[in-house]
Image (cartoon, rainbow, N blue to C red):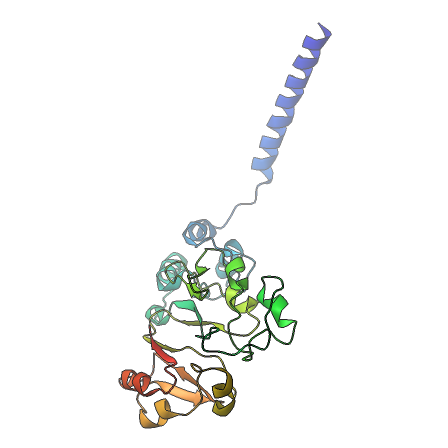
Length: 266
């Protein structure tokens, strides 16, 4: 009898407390702005922080308050900007100008074409490897291929191929730039998803030094820039870069003329 009474008392108290919590939730609830409720479901949900806010919902709240601009969410791309502008009742003229960016390894080095100072056998982490003389590669701007970028990628877009090269599945890349931030050598960079060519090198050292330890690195010869002025390539501090948005009808010729073939068609 005592057990039954205890059960009844607990059940009654549970019901009272449950009703009280339900009432308090409704009474004390803070109503969200209708625009916030409309924007939250269309966000990518990656919470990558590339917009500068703690997550997608924080960015939405800032947009509604007028504290943040549209277009800061690179994973969403132009389509998200267009949807957000419709909900916010804002006119955005430059939606088409929002380019989707993707991660890309700006290095073609491997043990066959680049020299190494020693054999690293430590923790499988690029940042750990750089603590010892900047990494085992003679080129201190090279991809160390230890996979720190793989570990931080939230979508599994980064992996290694059968030869150990770091590769990026651009369809899975959400432009969060976490891989760029974790890369200690700067080999991982963001490029336009529509870029036709890329200079796969990250080394700013003079060509004479580069040739001593890498056969596929940019040597800053300026052939692409001077002989092919409409290649879209410019050379700064001994390193060429390709600009898809510039006039580049000579880029194929420049790539063919490149002595180290570091200008690569994607």
